[in-house]
Image 1 (cartoon, helix red, strand yellow):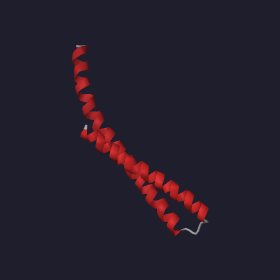
Image 2 (cartoon, rainbow, N blue to C red):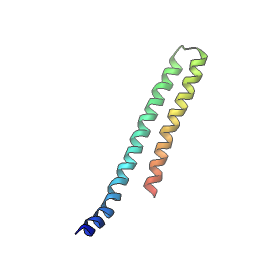
Image 3 (cartoon, helix red, strand yellow):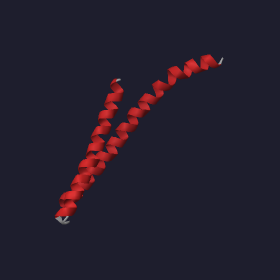
Image 4 (cartoon, rainbow, N blue to C red):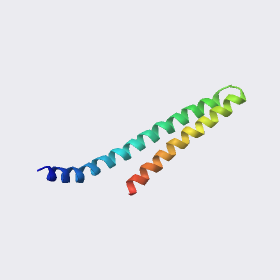
Length: 80
């Protein structure tokens, strides 16, 4: 009885977890790209000193990279 349940779960769980993992990476990537866009707009429109603009630009680049890499990871998972 338990071996049948284990076989069933071993077959079903990867089919459920994989799409959830892909969706999670896409949602996180979307949030990071939106944050990078909003912060980037604020940096361009703001009147902060150059030092804060540089630090803000680095922050926007980092957040944008996290967003893009999250979408790449989701694509990699979907292809495997």
